[in-house]
Length: 57
Image (cartoon, rainbow, N blue to C red):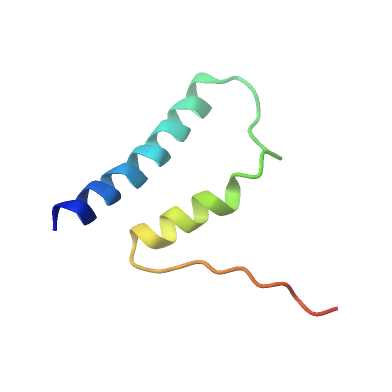
């Protein structure tokens, strides 16, 4: 219902806010630990999921 729609809008806003910060910044955006959280948001937005597991050595 409305709660799910609001959650989806909030997730989309997080991505849009991040993209806007990159556009306004002249600095390269790497090494900030935000790549995987963004991947997870995209996966969930499209109905999927992202799960990380520690690999055995």
